[in-house]
Image (tube, rainbow, N blue to C red; front, side, top):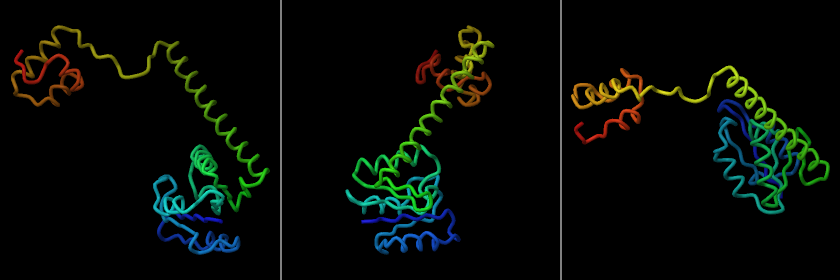
Length: 190
């Protein structure tokens, strides 16, 4: 059985083009699910309904890949999940059909490209961090000079006086609440 899923991003947009394509494929109206919501959010009611309706041996159909998700990684994960459930996938516009040998080949090429892209990003990030370290810059949050006995004494005094809110103490001394509490235990007098 063919299960159609259509989506538009805005309420004022219409689904007619997608619905016409589903009808041309012979998808019955009760097997077409739609959403009027952004593609960035994978939590969509129509998509959830379509996925609960699809069974092993069915084919999940979209008009175009971008109607399903925004990133190649999301699409690949989604299609792999369908495949693991024994469900085929078809994108009408791109001509991608995982129920055929050619469609599976194209899908695997997409998957390889996504993995390649992810590895390139990882290598660039690593190279950038290495270059920064070579120049003496370290990543992460800057270290706070809390070993200074004067600063610790000031923390304790400001905290025990109870004249200043904790947030103000932290802002004044440029420290986090956790740093303050590390040196000044609440409920104890110092």
